[in-house]
Amino acid sequence: MKPTNLAEWLDYQQRVHALGVDLGLDRVRAVWRRMGAPEIARQVITVGGTNGKGSTVAFVEAMLAAAGQRVGCYTSPHLLRYNERIRIAGVDADDTALIESFERIELARGDISLTYFEFGTLAALDLFARSDLDTAVLEVGLGGRLDAVNIIDANAVIVTTVDLDHVEWLGPDRDAIGREKAGIARRDRPAIVGEAEPPQGLLDALAAQGAHIERAGRDFYVEREAHRWRWHHRDGTLLDLPAPELAAPVQYANASSAIAVLHALQMVNPVELERIAAVGMHFPRAPARLQSLGGDPELIVDVGHNPQAARALAAWLDAQPARRVHAVYGALSDKDVGGVMTALGSRIGHWHLAGLEQDTPRGLPAAVLAGVLHQALPRAAFDTHDSVHKALVAARASARRGECMLAFGSFFVASAVLREVDA
Image (cartoon, rainbow, N blue to C red; front, side, top):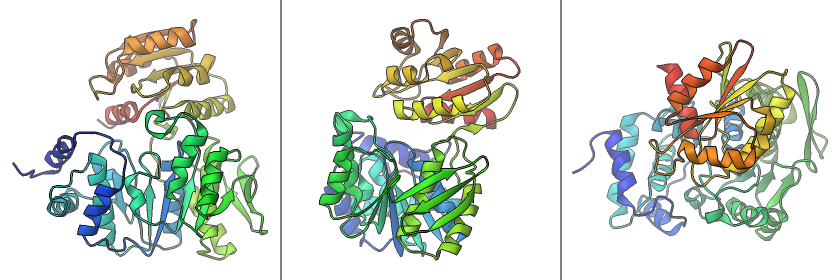
């Protein structure tokens, strides 16, 4: 039976393809060509990397909007509503537009099978092509070289960071993963490398593709002060900027990469670049990136879900006034849970472990998390719960004034907390 609403379409997409993840461009490219493969925007920026992609997209979007551009953003996964994945001129795609796009994709695909993510990617491209965009900003879903967004030739790319995640698909080490992420770059076009010590595999692959590489710490760098910072480029460009609204120290690197890509594309002169970058520091749309939901004890939610993200969380906690932290933590089966726990160590005063097996087949039960915690941090205090809701209730009951609750570990954790707060 033909789907009639957005929920039915999404359910259909999750059932129509045998594999949830099926990397490769042949199928999705063939369908896009059947749809006419129109230009999606006058310019395209693709953002890949292990962590920091969503925040970097948000900074790019905010800066381009400040420059008066009409911008489309495609990101994943979503937190509260599927519609968040496709944003045009700052507005999420509505159900009607998504359904009409899915119908066009279904008509074009014929006997070609598509994954849930590929349906969403084609819908974003289709809606962007109908929206008269100055710039489209595409976030890579997984890896880069074989990710569906890579059917589009970007004018410039950003690789934010490279660390161990999704090793079963991308490779066992940073070099291998870096080579996969380099696949989004194109010959003679800018490739911004957002970390100062990237794996050699990434640099070698970018060079082999003939990309114009610009590296953090070499071609551009950040000089921080108390409430301001400066962005420097080797060509002499110097921008004096307010601190980013997003809280974590790593956001300086994400904002810096966003500025670097606009500078590389020579979109505006340095004076205008400083103006739009300054505006962009205040208005990035990136929920659940150390997002404070207020209260006392304060509730903070973050989508960090791998060891690199946990190290960023640890750095943020170290920069805060000392206070006891109650973690509400849940994870998926393909994540390095022990690495996350070890990275945070004694910074967490009490772990409220939440099972996610009711939310997704990939969700780990709380008992499994407890077993890993005992191995990683034998002295850690914890309790277990069969849902994020129950873990959050327990955290609220045990946290005292002046302490904080940190909910993290998965988009499923972040979305459950945000839904509860919004209820």
